[in-house]
Length: 484
Image (cartoon, rainbow, N blue to C red; front, top):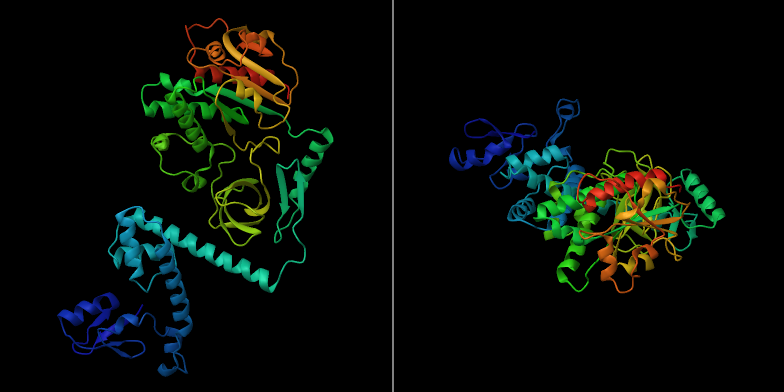
């Protein structure tokens, strides 16, 4: 701490007291009590640090030999980077704009968050903690990313890696790349899994897809309950590790039906996305207005920054060059991966002790490892027949198709065969039969199309079962009977 002494009255003054004392009391010069240098009203503010007690009371103390250039340079570099971040910051509110303007006018900005918060509160008189914390988070991320870019560029120019990245391709959909600067031992398990898949001559360990219409939202009174309904569906399908959700449009000629499909898909996509990626992936939208009221879905790939996860979901936030990118994986700082990606592209990253070991460019996010669920993929079908024509996991389509209805056969009496890609179809408010009648490409008799047409709740005690309730009941029974 720098302390001054007034040359007129001799009072000891801390730095923040000097200006008022000179302007309103003595109107004289002040002297630093450590180095004995004299300052005026215009120059005292530049005296930010002084001699330490060790040097002051040491045997060879000399005021004229005090050198603060090293500390001044570090502080100046930090201030320049803060000002640079403030200039490119995205201002959403007037409070944000005021904070960044005040920081641009300041020079003695602390480097630690606690001191930064105290500086902004006491010196800049800004006491909105949420706004200040958001500003600090943006500035800190910007500076870390800038430093990481500089390190990566220097490593490329001065000391290029001797071994190039090894790439393995499989069916054009999965790419595993060895990172140039990290060990690769944890890739052994992934490579063994890939060899087993090749031996079986299949492209997947087994998938379960669920198709349902967005017309179920038409029977809900208000947007809050509609959002809660979609959450309920997302939760149950995540609990039973469903790989794909297909939203089909029962009546494509109706604009309201199409809008309901878009809304349902947007909320499902939001709930599947890890919380640390949502701000970058989703813009403000009316459909997501009440999504913040929902409980977390807590899927296994929703990792906290303190969790040691084997896999993390990430989004490409910046390109260092043509072959290296920065990726946000929910840690304190951005990570880097080798590969050509597009901005805002989502990838799955294999981690080892919270460091990137490899990445899996996986557009369908299906499970590469047993007992690790990495979310569902969402697909839109403009009519019911297109649900079956376009399979996300195989060119040959689904090898097991199940329809659910209260007019179907008792599920307890049915034995399902082994399958690679299973599809379970649910009806809307008027049932699956009505959806089949509305599609001219579907057969007249619904049983002629589905391999199995089952009733998962025979002898029910209510007149009707809502679709979201039927999904809970059906997935509980079907999962136990499936033999993947």
